[in-house]
Length: 110
Image (cartoon, rainbow, N blue to C red):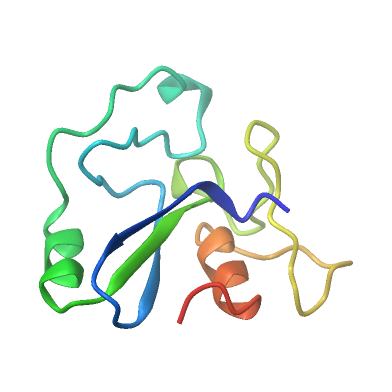
């Protein structure tokens, strides 16, 4: 279904959050859906927003797919696949946050 680039559990037991793969999470590569970053090393530290989510006790459930480099309106990505729109599988998931939107629509994140 290509919603997630990688799935994992990190943090507390609060609301479930899916993080777009253009945001750093320590220990995970940030590839932004691009061949240019296909061999990126894992991030050394979290982005501030990730630290804030974890400090609030929320749970990160994985890194989501996106339009390449978060620059597009369809969500279509020939490298990582295009997330399926759970509400309308025959339509594009839309935008650079296509994987994040699909994760929420599928009930995989709050």
